[in-house]
Length: 142
Image 1 (cartoon, rainbow, N blue to C red):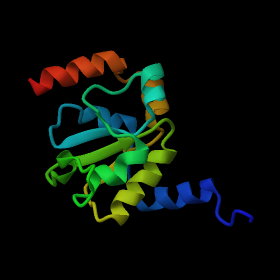
Image 2 (cartoon, rainbow, N blue to C red; image 1 turned 60 degrees about the horizontal axis):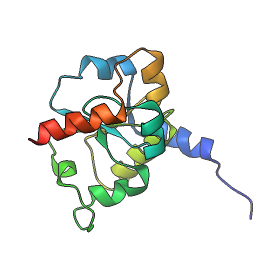
Image 3 (cartoon, helix red, strand yellow; image 1 turned 30 degrees about the vertical axis):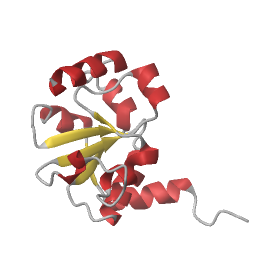
């Protein structure tokens, strides 16, 4: 069975329908408590490359389940309508698709970072290791 719509067309369609921030726009808002950065990359990517300090780690494969209050995997953080959830992945493709999916689910407070983590690193934006992130998360919890 031939593919009638390839990944690039899906990504292009998503990019046309979602809010996209540049790395610099997100960096300027790093201290803004109304913005929650969401890293949707796989744990292997996190272990290899690190992440953004304060990012919520939400694997792409679980995102829809974590967002839906009817799901047994629901994470209440996603119910906070006062926050804007800004997703990122490695290059901005998965996050564009994920942002579109969350919009399809009814979320209006969602966007993604253009260029993903690769763009973040290229701009020399701050990065923490996965271990540093875990320590930081534990300290926030108490």
